[in-house]
Length: 208
Image 1 (cartoon, rainbow, N blue to C red):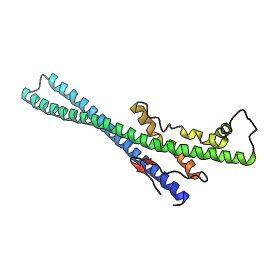
Image 2 (tube, one colour; image 1 turned 30 degrees about the horizontal axis):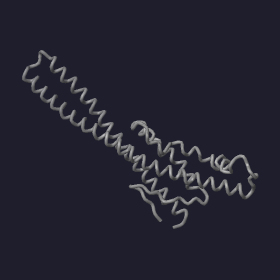
Image 3 (cartoon, rainbow, N blue to C red; image 1 turned 180 degrees about the vertical axis):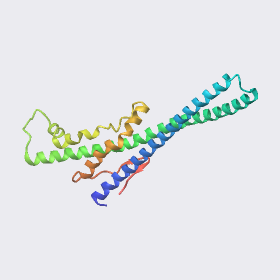
Image 4 (tube, helix red, strand yellow; image 1 turned 180 degrees about the horizontal axis):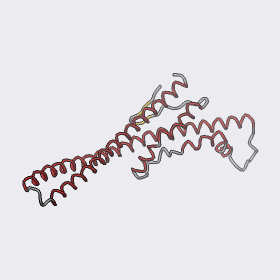
């Protein structure tokens, strides 16, 4: 498999995982929207129940039948709301887990790109300069601070490995994940002579 084809296979696999993350976020948003609609419906039913109880002029039999209907709907919708609460909790956990998987892979790509940039900076330096004998600082300090390396330093801004934060905060971070990952992907795709190692996770594997 050619270098470009191999890199494309790795990046396409991450893209597919990113699409799964977006789908998981969409599923979560759908569940939250349904829960909000049920909350509004339940509030309306509670208000209707109160109105029936306060209507002294209503026929008692009619009032009883109306209350039976209203309270039955309240019971059903309350049960559905509880079910949605459980589904939302499960979907949040699944979304964060998926996001962490994609984050680990993105971080691996970032580290590979950074290492390649440091190697390029070292090669350029070695072909043009010689470190002074007994220099007071290591050559690696120059390489880490070179323009080649610093230029990609900001690509770690999404904090791909930021696992230990509250669930809701992590989910909001993951909503920006795709947009923040895009520059890293572009940099990996355009980096000269970069050969991305296949990425391996329990649910993501790209091999030659």
